[in-house]
Image (cartoon, rainbow, N blue to C red; front, side, top):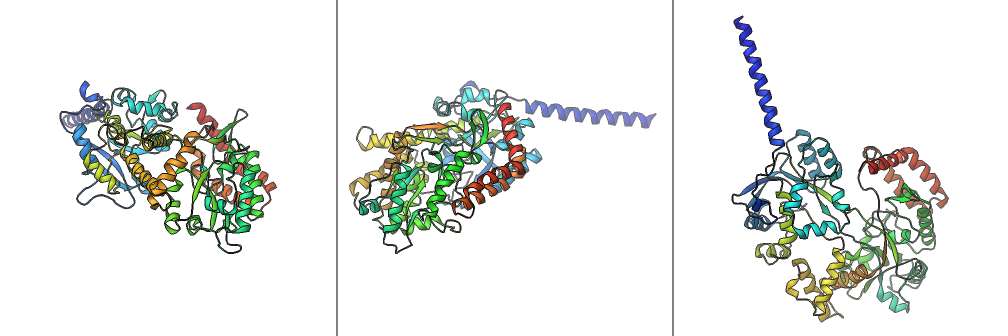
Amino acid sequence: MKKFLTLFAAVLMLLSVLSGCKMGSNQSSNSKSVASPQELKPFGKYKKTVTYTIGKATPGIPKLPKGQTYEDNAYTKYLKDTLNIQSKDKFEAQTGDPYDQKVSMAVASGDLPDIMAVNADTLRQLVANDSIADLTDVYKSSASDFIKAKYNSYNGRALKAATFDGKLMALPSTQNANIPTMLWIRQDWLDKLGLKAPKTVDDMEKVLTAFVKKDPGNNGKGNTVGLALSKSVGGNYGSLFVADNIFATYNSFPRQWIKQNGKVVYGSTTNETKQGLSKLADWYKKGLIDPQMAVRDSIESLIISGQAGAFFGPWWSGDYPLNSAIKKNPKANWKPYIISKNGDGKITAYTQNPVSEFYVVRKGFKHPELLPKIASAINDKLVREDKNYKPVVDFVRGGYDGGKPLNVMINFNDATAQMYKDLKATVDGKKDPKSLSLDDSTSYNNIENYLKNPKNPDPNAWSGYTSRIVAGKLMANTPIKEVNPVFFDQTKSMKLKWANLVKLEDETFLKIVTGQKSVNDFGTFVKQWKSTGGTQITQEVVQAIKEK
C-alpha cells in the first residue's frame, strides 16, 4: 500500500507538472501586448528598453563601418534613440539559401526568434501551426498613417497576401511597380545612320537590320549584335535582356498565371506566346539577335564592349550595366524608348508580385506591436522627419550595408514615378532640395552634375540622370494597360516538379528561337508541360485562388 501511495503521488505530481507546462504554454501563446496606450502609438517610445530577438539576414560581403556590428550600428542606434528598443540576433545567415535553411531549422524545432523574415510557403506553414501572432490589431494601432497609405497604394494586393481567414498574419515587404520594361538603344548609332527612334516592333526590326548590316560601331563585319537577348527568353519581368516587350505586343505573358477567357492559365503555354516566339525566331534567322545567345554567359560584356546596339531592360539599366559601358566609352550614348503595338506609346504589361517577403512575430512575444513600429520608423520617420540623422546619413553615403535589423521595405506602388516627379520638380526649381529623401538627394546631386556638363559627364552623373530623369519620365508618363497575375505562390506539386518544368520551358523556347526546333513544336511542348505536372499544378493553383 505504501508503494502504491508513493507511486500514485508521483503520478499526480507528474500530471500537475505537465498540466502546468501546458497552461504556461497557452498563457504565453495567448499573451497580448503589455505596451501602454502611448507605447502602442507608431512612434511612441518605450519607458523601459525592449529587447527583441531576430533572424538576421546578412549581406554576402559584410559592409559595416569599423567598430559597428549587426546589433550595434547606425540603424540600431536610431531605433534605440527613437523607440528605446534593442535587437539581439538569435541567428545570422547570408541572404538566400543559407538564411532560408536557418529559418527552416527554427520552424522545425519550434525555437523561433521574436521577429523574422519568411517566404510565402513558410508563412503558410507557420499559420497552419498556429506559431505566429495575429497582427490585425497592432497594425491598426502601431503602423503610421504613411505606412498604411503605402500599403493601400497596392489596392489591397500586398496585405491580402499576408491575410488568412481575415487575420493579418505578417507584414510584407513590398515590390513597387517597375513597369514598363524599355528598349535601350545606342542613340549615337541611330544618329550616325540617320535613323529615327523606333516606336513599333516593325520599326525596331528595321533599326536592328541597319545596325547589323552597316556596323555603325565599327566592330567589323559580322561582329555587331543587333539585339542582346538572354537565353532564358521568357524570363521574369523586370529582368535584364528578356523579351517581355515583344511578347506583350501579342498579349503574351510568359512565366505568369493569368486569366484568359475566364480560365486560369500559365502564360507560357498560350497561343499568343507561340506568336511571340515566332517573331523572335524570325529575327534570329535574319541575324538580328545575338547569334551566340545559346552559349553566351555574359550578356553584359556585349553591352560594355560596344558590340551590341539594343537590349530590353528596366528603368535602372542606366545604373547597370550602362554605367560600366559609359566608363569604357563615354561616347556610347544609350537612350530608353517604349515599343508599342501600333506606335501610339500605349502598352500592355503584367504587374509583378507586390510582395517580396513576409515578416512575422512569434506567437507569445509580449510586444507584437514592435514589428509595425519598426517598419514605420524605418520607412516613414527616418526617411521624412529624421532624414538628416547623421549616423545613418554617414552610413548610407559610406556605401555600407546590412545595418537595418529588419529589412522590411515598404514603398508606394508608383514609387519610381514619384521619384521622377520629385526630382524633376527639384531640378526645375519647384521643390526645395532639402525636402528630398536621402536617396533622392544623392540622385539629385548626380543629376545636377550631369546638367553642368552634359557633353562630357561623369559616368555616375550620366547614369543618375539617364535612369531617374530620362527613363523615369517614360515610367511616369507611359499609358499602361495592366494585367495582374492571379497567383504568385507555390503549390504542393510545384515543390517537386516546377524546376523541371521551368527547365523544359527554357530549353524549348531557346531551341525555337535559335531554329533548333520549329515553332510548330510549341504544341508538343504544351502537351509535355501538361503531362509532366502542369495540369496538376494548374488545378492546385485554381484551388489555392478559391481558398484565398
